[in-house]
Length: 430
Ligand code: ADP
Image (cartoon, rainbow, N blue to C red; front, side, top):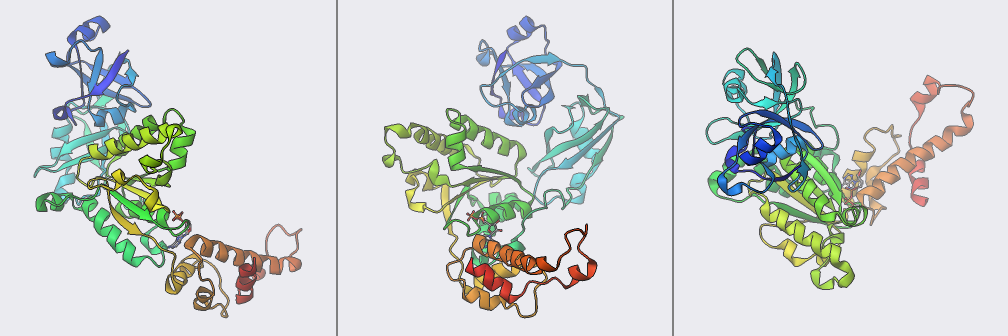
């Protein structure tokens, strides 16, 4: 078994791992050979000798892209297996990026030359240079035959367009009510750098790595993070503070590292940390028994500092207690942007009600603006429940006239089902 160590930046995207030639000899492997490495995934790579300086460590050096492909983290133990790799007849790839690509960027001919000789397996992420200093990651969608293959001169390469439907199920900006000011700030901070990384680089502005959303529970912080991911087609991962501390007791930091590595492997990504106050209370408030939190904060700080400031990974954290967070987390380069997500006002409530009654057959007497007026203090989550309760009240109203022997609700009955103002009133009383 060898220990996984970080590889050299210059090997990124070349499908190379390196090891001590002495280890190769011991394991019966040779320089330049294709081998498979396996963590939670398996991936084929080319084995090369490492520099003299890195010898004698019984280590396998691999960059984070390859670690993502193999499902390995730094310091994991891994074994290496020889594998027979043939040229593929067909390979299909698709870009994994939110940056704007030109038609010619997706031309299979030049891409094929770049991938020639690279060992791959379905699901791998590879990095290709598109010229003009632009790197773009592609995913291997399928290969024929399956298993580990290599692209050869006779391989037919197909490049899929990134389809809008890909990750686009789920919430969108139009499903969020009453927060247009917040949304436009967030889009500017997160969506712009995700979409136009080159523009930011060129202007020398650093896109934020971390954004803190704060406000009472149920005001839409989670939906905002999800909507940004859906709209930008970024990869989305969600962890909650209490879950990290509790569920992974003893492995909290490792879990956090895994989340970041995974996000890196799937970038552009959004990491959403809900209830961050649970992992990051002020350090001075942490007594002796708060050792775990202290270590987790330190780990989170290190991971955020290690993110490249290119806006391709954004950490969105949410809390309802912004002042209970370790100030170190709010320093520049970390969660240095804050967006309040307040309890909605009357107009906001009306917008949210409109969203959550969109698919419902409302009677003519239903006056959403009136309902918005009398629901002072309700947050988005409460209004969503209110709409559902009103629908239940409507259902309860027609129950006595329903024939329970009937396998279906008769069409005429179905057609006339409506939710009226009375239903909302009774939902409000509950
Ligand atoms: P938070 O993360 O702030 O605690 P969530 O984003 O999880 O709250 O909201 C819970 C549910 O309430 C969501 O699934 C959503 O349906 C609804 N909701 C909350 N805020 C809004 C809003 N501003 N617009 C529309 N729906 C909302």
